[in-house]
Image (cartoon, rainbow, N blue to C red; front, top):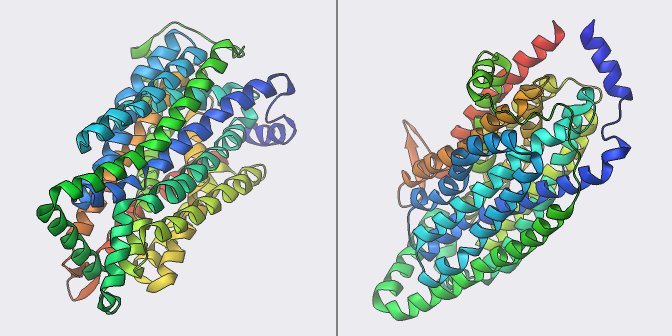
Length: 469
């Protein structure tokens, strides 16, 4: 009974051996670093929409550039760390991260949306290196029987970085934008707006912004310049933090894990991976998971503003609450994995996420927003657990196999623009006609996360069955 033996071993084997506790903690800081980048960037979708006066679909290109960088660099990163070492991959990742963040300086000076996209694209080259390196490295830092729990523990620090990114975005960026002040002034100057539907308010304020741009381009450009300088601030600071971490890792002694083979046999490895159904299913599930996560966190702001008439900073505060729930749930789920199979828990939480997504779509007012926030509790387990299930028992193949799972982050590049397009289909009041039924377009757009959670539930169910056989 190998499964029973493995389960017994998992209860007694250390999650992190004492001999490598310090290196484990050092590598775990990387999870917080890319969490910060993820969630200081999400609010830029809405901010850039108003600063540059572009559509939802166009502003969602922020996510296409950000997560497209993962897709571009995942396989080169895997080949690099297979040829050299985990430490080399970390150093290259930190260097690219800092480079992309510093490119926000010329992008803000030139006031070009496309240059911000380039900066984010390069920044995520670095994140792709870090994630492709750190995830399999953490899996290898100790007994195989506790690998998934160890990765969940390390990943638990990712939402801490995300939470810091959200707080910075809310308090130091969104609340300080000139365009936010402009919207507040319009609401005060037009008390009749309080009687309008949220979509109508948004349309009128956006039209006023366009009129301001056309009638006084110099003043509008000055407002844009000030906002872009505000946006670049956190990226310059994080670049300095990342460069400091680069210096620390350069002198740190990191352990060589068992079987650290530097020979690259890419075609043979890829053939083995393509024959592994559990791995391929994991790549598919991860693609849909990341898509669902980014859609739920990106468009929570749109949802609160369009459906509940909230301001941008106020809507972002609900995003912070969602991340706090995500962070707390991650630690709880990591503990539960000591007693519950990863596939079974993944299935249950995916079904919970699907149910809450239906609530987001069909429940009115704050009930719908609370449902959207609650989805984060269900999502907390998913990324590291899918990752651990897919790479279980792969040994050296995990270095290349991790590339496919990091490439799956492309789901965050492909799906938000589709959701933005659905929102843009709404009429001037922000509503979308679906046969005989009419509903807010932003609510209808959550059909995409619903599909994602169904796919994840199927993968969790299949892996749970395989474990029981």
